[in-house]
Picture 1 (cartoon, one colour):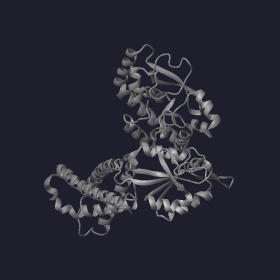
Picture 2 (cartoon, rainbow, N blue to C red; picture 1 turned 120 degrees about the vertical axis):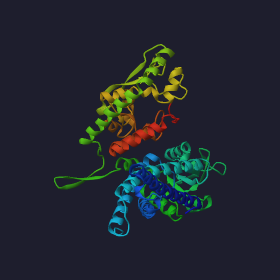
Picture 3 (cartoon, rainbow, N blue to C red; picture 1 turned 90 degrees about the horizontal axis):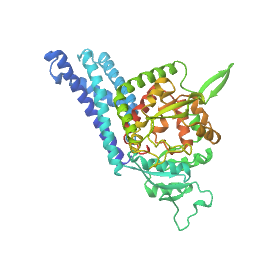
Picture 4 (cartoon, one colour; picture 1 turned 30 degrees about the vertical axis):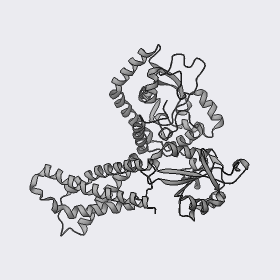
Length: 469
């Protein structure tokens, strides 16, 4: 392991340990507040705090909390933290009950307070650690040196994604090619892709990895055969580097395989919809509750925006446009008007950066996504959901269904205010094919926690998303 990774893991362990002990002190203070000084001094609980600390770190290790290479998003860790802290507390109760019941006295309320406090302190500690780690990695400190295998569209897309998210902690040093065709023959001794050098072919991977100090290899060759991929992975494994593979279309579509039967004949189901039965009712209840509360909460802001839109330029406050929803049925999606009244005089078109059709107020509300707030009305009416694939205009749907495999499968669920593709940077003028893959993954892997995670990340990105225009 590299020195930087060791330091990162060590500081994370120390952070968790400090937060665990802090949580026990907070729990002690809470018990003093609720029960007074009769509970005794804090040093009477040091052994209990030590047992809880050891169990917490042990469970975190078993849950692979210290196997990460890069700063994790808080929304990705909340569920895991809740489970791990709960298990650690139960282990502490069991250990004391079965092993130390004759030598150590404790109050159950103390451990309940400690459990609740640990959930808060561990979350805050890991959030602070991730922020510091991301800031350092943005400056190149502790960043992982990465080699991308593949110079085609997928390889370039991976490089652009890394460029746009420096907090991932990656620093791409170059590309390697599978060595096909004349397009990559060096014209003047060095071939480059997007300002980075092509360091060689896959046959030269061991030498490239050693010479460049590569820590991670990302394979972006979805068109490569399984035999070729196995050969590339074998060459990389010799150098003890981490390997990631961008999946091909089939792997994305078959992300979760289930076993069913046909009159006793076993079958594999690879294209299933996760949102069925009672889950549909649950999702609809969340949509109604969420949209109602949001409309109540943001109604003053919506009134202000409506006034500014009307004051800024002639025309209606709202812009209603046909979009395709569940089962490819059209509905009117509502938005605050952000463009001139004659913006679509020559037909609909994609919004571009610095679009001259935008009004002065439109520039601001589009950049902050405030123009989409009226869509909570669509959610309340049942035309849309809080989370789902973003709806497209019928003319575009007809165009995309002819060229993109399984594009119409997006319409097996309601369209959403936000979605898995959007929080991963695929909005606006981005690849429809890639967006479709993300939408299909969401449909086939839906869970209520995934919806909450998408909503939280949307809220965090609302004022920082550079793809909104």
